[in-house]
Amino acid sequence: MPARFGLAEARHVLDAALDKADEIGQPMDIAVVDDGGHLLAFARQDGAIRAGIDIAVRKARTAILMGMTTEQLGVAAAPGGSLYGIEVTNGGLVIFGGGIPLAGAGGEVVGAIGVSAGNVEQDITVAQAGVEAFDKHAG
Image (cartoon, rainbow, N blue to C red; front, top):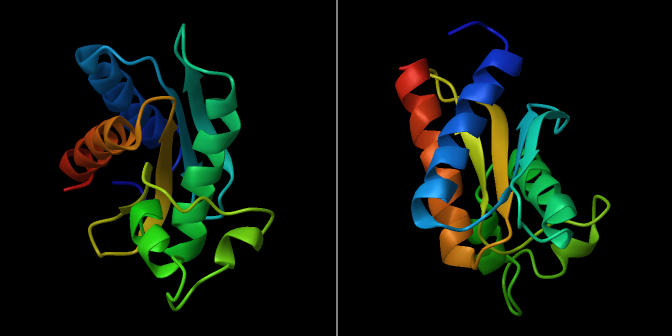
């Protein structure tokens, strides 16, 4: 894999996630960002909710900024958790599932995917398909 996570890799991740969304029959908003949280690739499938556009981008951005899944962050941000209240920082972080970092062969986080428009389980399933495609391509 190239030293830098770029558009070709982002499109590979995006395409795999789109295929999974089609497979489960849930139109999705899917965002892929680089290691700085900058958008590289995005798709909104026909029928995906408009609110999911911003949520998908924020999920991807949250995953890269925090270096963990948005699902994991949700646990840490719950009342009594060590990161309680963090969702109001950094312009708004997302603390429910659907954002997952993408780690290169050496374990360095190089990007992230964020998915929205289904229920949380569907969002995670579609995001995970993108991660698995990245892992196969990078490995």
